[in-house]
Amino acid sequence: MGREFDRRAAILLAGAGLGIAATAFGQEDVRPKVNNPRATDGDSKFEPDWDEYLTVTVGNEHADINGKDDKAIQAAVDYVGRIGKGTVHLLPGKFTLRNSIYLPSRIRLLGSGEDTVVTKFASHSANISEDSDWYDQEITFEPGHQFRVGDAVFIQATNSSNGVQENIKRMLVARQGNRFKLNDGLRKNIWLSGKPKGTSVFPLLTSEFTEDVIIEDLVLDGNGKNNVNMNGNYGGAIFLQDCNRYAIRGVTTTNYNGDGISFQICHDVVVENCKSYANANLGVHPGSGSQRPLIRNNRLYDNEIGIFWCWGVRYGLAKSNYINNNSNYGISIGHCDTDNVMVDNDVINSGKVGILFRDDTRGKDFWANRNVISNNRIINSGSDNGVAIKLEGQTKDTQVFGNVIKDDRGAAKRIGIEVSASVGNVRMQDNKIEGVLTKVVDNRK
Image (cartoon, rainbow, N blue to C red; front, side, top):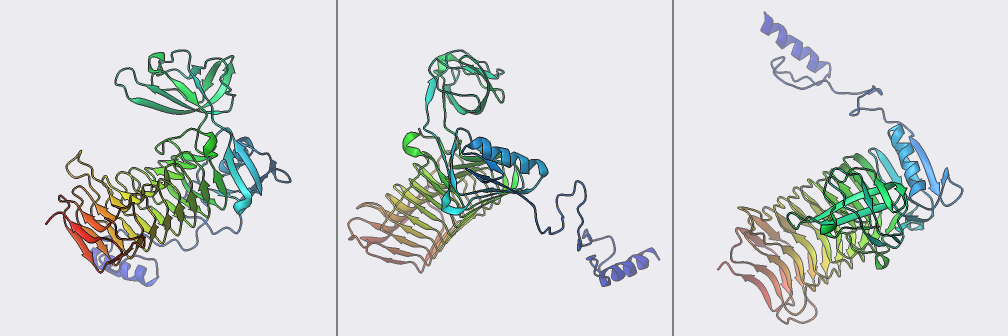
């Protein structure tokens, strides 16, 4: 009787359109579909499709918040973040920062296209003049340091125990003479034996442990000629760490002495219809551990590398990007970067190699496996001995098909596709190669 009742109940529920599978009742973990959600306290998964959220404007004048620096933008961002969701709209104008803009979850930062320029002042450095232990929350600079309360500071020192470079990003929140309190503890020893210093470099836009953010339609100019380099594992015009579901659209990142866009251990990041050019290092840097990045319809040029797949980047798609005149590589992929697709990209005038599969000999299987290179146009790669596509190390299960590889500068010693002796299975099919001395060099033979 009980089983018959369960069966009849399942049929009735399915017929009512409640989404319960019409199999043995209770055997399927399928819940009723949410058709008409209400705003319910604590429920972040389902909400009504509201017509309007709060928008706060920021501008040099005639805005809700008027200003020309990070304080004005951050005030608006924090206000909207406190409410829970909304837009900060940067009006036309120039904003010069002394600190990063820290983005909270569920915010849209919207510019006014090329008329909104966010930049930073020239960097300066100062030696740290007193020892600070790992549990301290303060540092002391030598006189003449130029730092102010509210500034970002990038602290660097050599670890006296193991010789490793320590890198710490903090904000100066209080001052007594040359002595500054930090917004957070050091958590690393900053001793004079490690020759510590502080430098006023920082990402223009940054965030950690946030989600569901949109950045749109603005220019980020890093003032690179007047700033020292900031490593892409710590900074960039945009730098994200441990974030989820970011969409970066219609944004220009340029002149940053480092990376244009860098995100580390960030998942489902979308970068589309952006320009990242004339940055000292990487155009777009999907960083270590990032899953499912989508890099689409961007213009990445005049950098060191156009797209740099870092470590353990998986299930990503780079599609329909214009990647031109990057001084080292158009695209570089390596350590544990698996199951990614690069399709329909124009990779032109790369300084060394158009698309490089890096070697990494430090582990059992640290190579870029099961990646697809399809229907790209790879033109004029490297100097006289340049290579359009180069597979190194023990990379395996790679598919390279339907690509157009061309060089119109004369054959010289140039190679279309080069495969190192230790590389595993590669499918090479229907690639059109012309203008090079050797179409394919397969050193496995």
